[in-house]
Image (cartoon, rainbow, N blue to C red; front, side, top):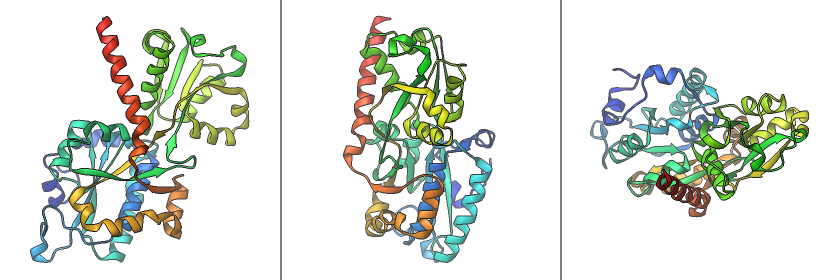
Length: 338
């Protein structure tokens, strides 16, 4: 099947499970994923030849291709066709200006086993994934995290459990038998894992038993407005997204309140194949670290509400790591009871 990639790209990714065209057309890409694509296309200017040292096609003087892999969990919020069009305009312009890369392509990787397989097969040079995905496979792939994305509130994102102020709901236990809406999207399993742990700490049943219904939705408006209009009892949402929505709709912020707040969690991580990064470390660090000071780069970041890229530090993963460990213990304990 032809997925629209060049023969070289298909050859490098033949061991990778790509999303079918039908599935891709039904998805939409999160703005941060698009930003990372534009950023990396714009500023990764040193020559890189795919494959082993010397590279495919280098003996023939051919220009190399740069391949980015995206976790499918990153995709929502921007229509796929719009994202493709925007990426093409930027990449065509920048690649022509640089005169370095033959082309750049993106591989959408469907699940964690496929992500691991693509990384070990060197089917991609750079992988953009959720922090929890990296933690699960970090000891199995020749990739390292290099940059974290920073939003307006910093590197970390908090989640809040929201209810109407006039419903008489003051604590988590008051939500027994109520309807819950959860904002998902790029955040993966982190919000629901945190809620599971919150319930367990208060010696309450699992979410599926505690709430009368739980519905996951992609957009902040889809989870907040039903609570505002009394069509649902509570919602679990990003604090930043809720605050942004409240600025546009002050009445929403006035009528809703948070009864629980999560720790801050890293939102995304950009990982480079170690041999690729070792060769171009100085250039990558200088270009990406100063991106927000470049007028063109700042324009892209502002448009998609990403402030800047922060050099990755191990501490960035601590809260996600701790959450995953506690959730595994919780699931094991629940399994023993059954």
